[in-house]
Picture 1 (spheres, rainbow over the protein chains, first blue to last red):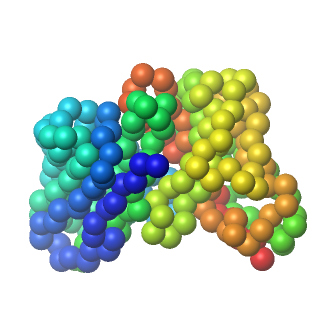
Picture 2 (cartoon, rainbow over the protein chains, first blue to last red):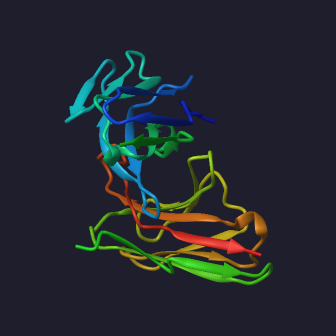
Length: 112
Length: 113
């Protein structure tokens, strides 16, 4: 069974602060995705990283895939209230039919 | 395009009652999924359908059945609901060959009393 652990589980910060969310596993993934989920809605894909060491930027969000493809991080610069939500990482492994394994999520609240 | 739609949005059942959750997608995706989401546990796969005409068990299939009615529709049935099935249920779809990037519906919030 492949497990993905996210940390922290909860994060409450002030507008303008920076933060990093971590997603760790002992398993290797062929790709890793980050989703954001707002209350009452389904998760929405933010980014997919596929190469070890890859870094992708989406405006103020920076995503990194670990060199060994076992971990990933999401860094938000100058957080805004609109960033509030549940952030989920999900790994796909080809030896598991590319099914996604989801982390437990990080609930972020950005206060104005 | 509506993307992935789910009905109903909310449902309250009594223990032992049955119901079917409906899901439809208009993106012409081959694969469809049913997940449940419980606090602190992320999303857990119940059943999936890699293509029309096939269904397979996921991580937590007990107490559920599914039907892939056609390429667009994938339903989830609870034959005899139990309080442990209180959860939020999400349907998703994806296309083969895109790292399984999934598109989710808005969810059904189910309470079993």
